Image 1 (tube, rainbow, N blue to C red):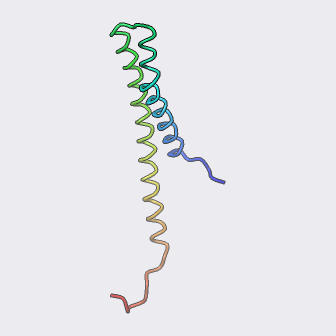
Image 2 (cartoon, rainbow, N blue to C red; image 1 turned 180 degrees about the vertical axis):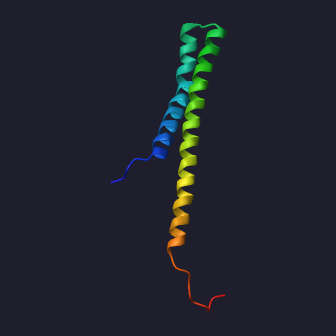
Image 3 (cartoon, one colour; image 1 turned 180 degrees about the horizontal axis):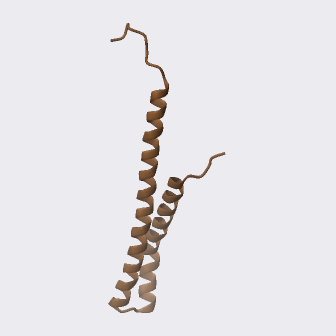
Length: 92
């Protein structure tokens, strides 16, 4: 059974919100703008809000990826140091 980790949760949240924002930008936002005949200031306000949410999602993903890399490097250093050095002198 796998246990959930902080980095997995952050990366999942970041990528999930990023996927939603991409779909929103590509499909829903043009339909919303065309259906309501909004002014440019209203359109730019919506794009700004969605951009800020997208930035926060990107930060979550980046933080999760950074934590994952740091933990992986630490685990490899621990595993590398567990094995004794070779005493076979035939290989130089």
